[in-house]
Length: 129
Length: 312
Image (cartoon, rainbow over all chains, first blue to last red; front, side, top):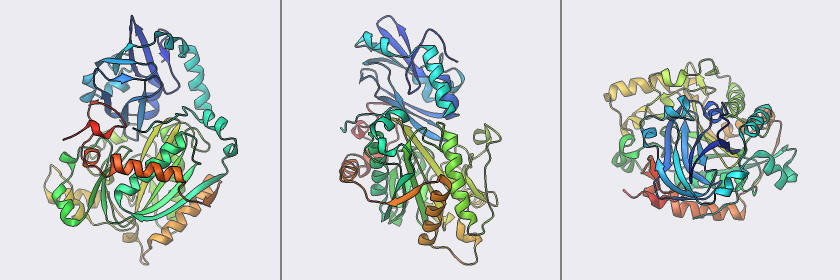
């Protein structure tokens, strides 16, 4: 549920650093809270993102939610398969459910993101409220 | 483009607004009857202002004039709506910030509730919020001696297994904690979450006319099949009452129920100057524009807030 090789933010996005790029998606915890995903809205390649700001939206059978980028950068890849298979976000959030890849504008931003242990603690605190 | 400082969780909100720590006093807005564009702009203005910590938790009760068809955020107008039929009937078409399917707003009471995510008694999850609000609405309608029930959270996949889940019409798709009378949906709700805030709004039907809905929505099956489906899944309060209930009576009862069940005091207020400004900007840049109302978001979108991204 909380892969150690990823970084996380409180808005439930995960980041996998791949060289000078970062792959971004929604965590297992978040998709579980949202329930079945029916639509995903993602930016076009080339779009400039600013850390902790929305990059898209997601709709489940019960709610729409902003997708928040953990880092700043330019979108270089978009998972277009989610248009026809939004359920991949539920079924494989860290694999086939990836959403975008960004070229990191400021790699130092990664250092301020949560580790798997920190994010796990955060979700437990949130669930206990 | 509107720029905001985002509060990304409930505790950030508290640090900014010590006054609301006990969260025992909420704001109540009675904005009366407005057109669909204005109604949706007001809901979003309050939502955005709450995200910034500039607005208190708010319950708003309102009506619609003229009637309007609101579409879910991802719903495609071209596939869902007969726009010429809407125009002929004087029905506006507006896209919501929240998800879900089409709702025809006419003789109903609409509620919207905006507050920080995680604020008691709502918990942090989508379903917890639906449950709490559903309890408030259930109690309000029971006050009219209606035999109301709700769809319990028994089956996680009840929505996807239901044959009407992908139906163009919101009220054909029952979901957890939604209110029914004799198994038919009488209240439809949708939620939007982000920036540490959630908005849930919904329609409680006083009256409805399946023929009008069949005129303005697009459907793949025949008209009679669609009408038959509507009659089996959708109802309104006054179809079950010998003495009809009006808008203001329902409004008073729902307001009282929210106050009692949330354990808060609802102080009647007004939109702030800032919220008015936001609302006017949202109307101008978004809700009064066909680019927003008629173009659903697709997999590629230049911006989540820039409605100029989509031009047909």
